[in-house]
Image (cartoon, helix red, strand yellow):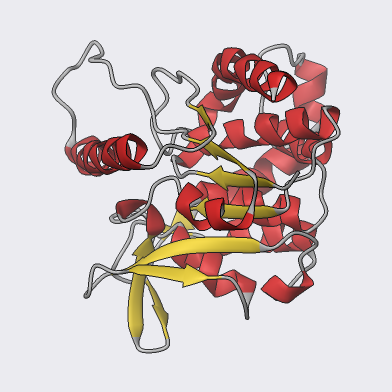
Length: 272
């Protein structure tokens, strides 16, 4: 039985994908094909290169502060934490507020693959053409520009220029790209890490929250329409509350809040 896995975009909430991958590993299930958008493309590329879910989880925990970390634990991982903070620096050029070069230096040090063809599992990465509003699909050639384009969140990271095209985050056209794996597998698993929206103590959002929140609303509407027309075999949506897209201090909460959805996935896979 061939399993197709689609990992959606969602910023920091996308780290929930690591728990999905670990659950598949624990059950002895290996996807035959993976598609990813934005953060889903990053996690998907690392897994497709041969890194296990357990390895990715440890890498994440080593580079972030966990709730049960002691002061000694935090001190021992200080170099990793400093490296993590340096991954996102202010963008000097127009088009975004953050640079992503540090992030990709760390990621590709782990991936050790330059081309799609070098990956152990076939991978499809989704970006969007800024001018034509078309979906741009990457599944061969250089890996780095594809992932950079797929996660170029408008207003956060600068667009990527590639072959006379200006590319931005794939989530604006295809938030959870399960339609790109369905034709190639027997069972399709789609993971949506879009946040659950609730008003907080300051219900009027600031400028950045308004921008990212509006994008999220459009993505949710498009995904709902696609799910109604062509649903995947298994659809998982962790209920992640109170974690904004770029809130890297909330990683531990993302993992904790995702656990019920991971248990649901495991039960569905066992029944399957």
